Image (cartoon, rainbow over all chains, first blue to last red; front, top):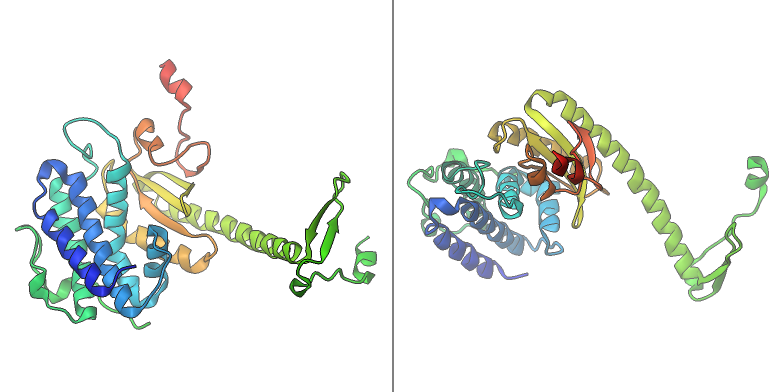
Length: 154
Length: 160
């Protein structure tokens, strides 16, 4: 498990790569978006000293069972399942996901809505600057208060 | 039989007895020896297994109820072992990621985690209209079909 700053650095690293991925690789777009979200929540876990076994199952369990994190789980789960489908699916053809998700879906929903909401909540809970996490695509919603996943008491 | 069993003194297996040997005599007389600690641990594990099994069957019931109430929107629903636990796989009718189903799946996921804590489980929608594509996510031999049509075996697919 890394420190909070280690995870924030990796979160930013993944975001900067995400911004460079072309529509033709939307399977990787959703995967990298998910891993940006992973490091965002791991930064929060590091701050909270919330420990899990270091697997997807362990992380998911912590997010869905602990009231403080359940609102994050609601917006973290869709990129988790979509990225898993993108990684496992071995469909062939010109489109990397055979229409399961499109580049537009990924940019508008998985990044513009779900990742954005995970990030906004984590940024708020970590009390760090939003300026370091600008919107990734023009179609992505600008960070706004309405799109926060919200915090629940522990 | 039951009445005489209740009159018998219980057999005590104490973890503190550590390496004290326990001789186990199964019905087939294939006797084996283990330590008190190992026997006590095996008993605890068996109790947990029983509890897990009860939660697992209750989880299948809950998933079935969800699948029935969402039948117009889903093609199939499976419960399958995956690395580290179980997965509930949902194949949406839409044949693409169904964003309208997402909140309902999250509600199901959170309620399964709360109600059946021994059965670690993730709920996921997957592409599965094409059997070959579905097989990349689950093993039909191991998955339990909760809703929808069974996946045809490879041999039947190839014969067509």
